Length: 249
Image 1 (cartoon, rainbow, N blue to C red):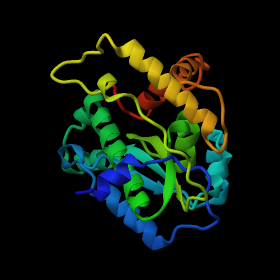
Image 2 (cartoon, helix red, strand yellow):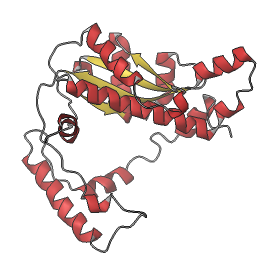
Image 3 (cartoon, rainbow, N blue to C red):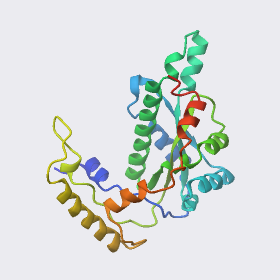
Image 4 (cartoon, rainbow, N blue to C red):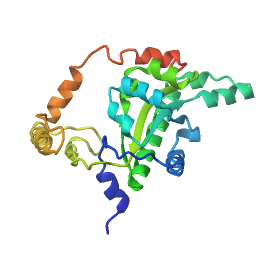
């Protein structure tokens, strides 16, 4: 028997071309509701969702991300790791907020934010929408913090552009399961190099055959290109995270 949820998950595509049609307020509410029902560490709900609707702010975010196509989406969310609410609760109750500043609690807020982000994407696709999760807001986290007027103990982690898909990109294959799913212990077996070469050929064929932005690239080449980029890009992340009050111990 087919499972519609598993089928949907296995058909995920990043959408970057959208119809000129905004999401309704009801759709936005439904997506936020889906985020709120995601799993959350210790039920502490350590994230917030910001809908960015101001055109000038969206233009600034497009500059930060280097992705002007995001301006054509139907709605834009910024997903924020958030311990500020819990800090306010601690202060009101006269409790020492020491633990909120720990690396453990920062990671918990990152987990909560990421899971809520995926819930939004899955919910959007179930509604016939599509989008892209954008880590590129981290190109300039200080600017994002200023734009969104984020208080201490918050940090902008991800953007999400959602809209009505204008196209349906070809589906990218993923790594062979033997290279990423192990039993009991981590183990890349002796066939890894051969399997990687096969996957590189498969990835290269995908890039050559797709209908838009075809190029010569393999998975290995992609990883090498990622590691050969500007070393100064996002090099201040740790400093900004700590300046927001996270990971002080």
